[in-house]
Length: 100
Image (cartoon, rainbow, N blue to C red; front, top):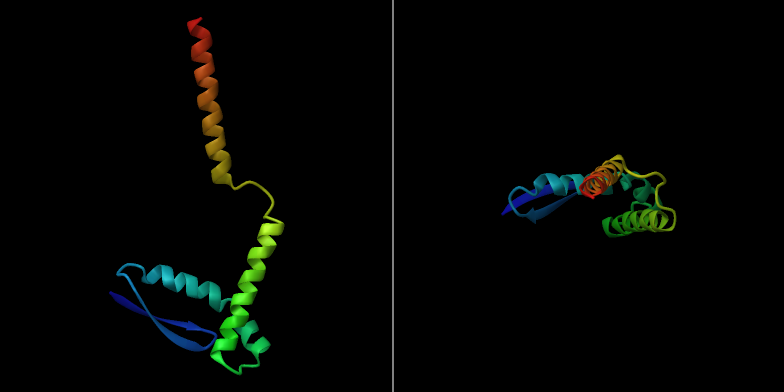
């Protein structure tokens, strides 16, 4: 079992994780830390618990915004998958038409 120290809003937090998951935890902590300064200001720096509450509220607000108005546009990977499927359908139709 591994242990990672994550720094969020100026406070260190030791977290245990499975071996190999350290990078994922650091990436998640980075997302939290992106709101750290604003959360510290909002909480008045009174407590780490209150600061984390404000970070959680900011992240929840982002999730709600994405649910209400998802980002526009279709991701390129999805377009590629759709194109591949359409090509397969077209090929199958051509093969079926040639057989008749």
